[in-house]
Amino acid sequence: MGNISPAVRITDYVHKFASQAPTREAVICAEQRLNYRQLETRVIACAKALLDAGVSAGDRVALLSSPRLEYYELFLATTGIGAIWLGLNPKHSYDEIAHVIDDAKPKLLFTLAEFEGRQFEQDMQQVLDRFDFIEQLVVIDQVFSGAISYSAFLDKAKTVADADYHAAAAAVSKLSPALIVYTSGTTGRPKGAVLSHYGLCFGATIQTQHFLVDKPRVICSMPINHVACVADICSTTLVVGGTIVLQQRFVPSLYLQTIEREKINIWGGVPTMFLLQLNQPDFNDYDLSSVELVLWGGAAMPETAIKQLQTLGARLMAAYGMTETAAHTTYSRAHAGLEELSNSIGCPDPNMPCRIVNDEGEPCPPGTSGELQFKGQYLFLRYHNRAAASRAAFSDDGWFKTGDLAYWRSDGNISLVGRKSEMYKSGGYNIYPREIELQLEQLAQVDVAAVVAIPDPMYQEVGVAFVAGQHTDQLSGERLRAHCRSGLANYKIPKQFHILTELPLLANGKIDKQALRQTALNQGTQRAD
Image (tube, rainbow, N blue to C red; front, side, top):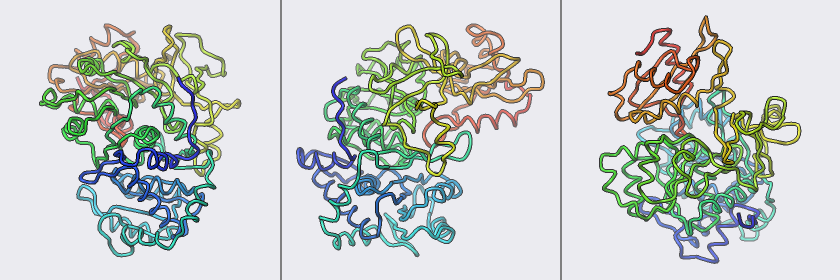
């Protein structure tokens, strides 16, 4: 890797490219197209309006929105003056939204009035009635009672001098908090990971050195409350002066059309997104020749999908990261083959120290699974309002405990075994769901598999497998069981098999294993064979 010399603030890159490449496209959203000079003008105006509203360093500013232009400029404006930005997902329930607002206590709240037919006026009135710490509510599309319009908010920028903006920006240091990202909450109420400017800038710089794409053009349709949207896509594209195409929702056909129309050169996402696109009946009709890099993270990609992607001629890359790492920390090597791409998360970046240790904190030899851990200033600063959880996330010698079980391979890559919290014991044996899922995904008819554990009076816990795909009508529970038996020890074979058209997903695109576990419990001991 080359030298790592990130800027102090993520907004420094806006100013850098407004100076160096002012007419280069920075962001595209529907019919709106902004170059870097125009983006800088809008970000500064938004930042001044925030200052007029009384926002200062450390204050939280929240936005309930889809990925659209207002999201990008508000994120950059908020962080640029030392305040802390927070994204809210319009697909979440009122209770989910209220939990995050109550925990983060934003001073200003920005919102959509409507998204995908859902009206937010009543929810926002409830929020205002319940939480008196919100000083102003701003609606970014159509205004309603109790709020002001986004344009009226921006008008306040005229009252703030340039010197005041520059003074606020200059006071932001590299380890100043930039944003809070709430984890998906698969094992409890979501916690807010506080990420620093350095985490964004350093992590994004590392990622670009692995991507090796000059002037990247990428699509962002991930939820704005997700680290993949803010850090992995937007920040990583910004630090090299690339172009971001914002889309308010993920639509497989629209995504493919946009690759063709906008000459997208990095095609990224979680495996579920790729599977939905690859399964489009007219997939082969799209011109995807502009794509230089196909990148996925968040879960393993099925071999059948990798084989299809290999026919494109672009580089393929699997990467691994977490909300708390603010960036991907491992990457598959250039020209990695099918086995490496499907069964490993690649190698750790040398600038991000990595270790795998057992329960006693001792390094694990190759082939022996332990907890994957990382170290460095780029890691999240803390969990907001969670001092005990913040301490528990790190070892005594400062290593972040990911909660992922993994092992070193003989080729220097790392393979994941599963989450420590997902490992279960059946008849005294440790069982890792990912091993069973990989076995099931070897079947051509299975696009994706998920295994969860439920209580059992004899074995303490037993596995329940769910599979989904375009051709699962060719499968049966007995065939799935026989395939597991061909590659796994008997005690690892799930006791139930469920064949579905699709698996439930969390807002971040990962499989909702909590929902699957509830489905399995509701089935009781009845086998879905």
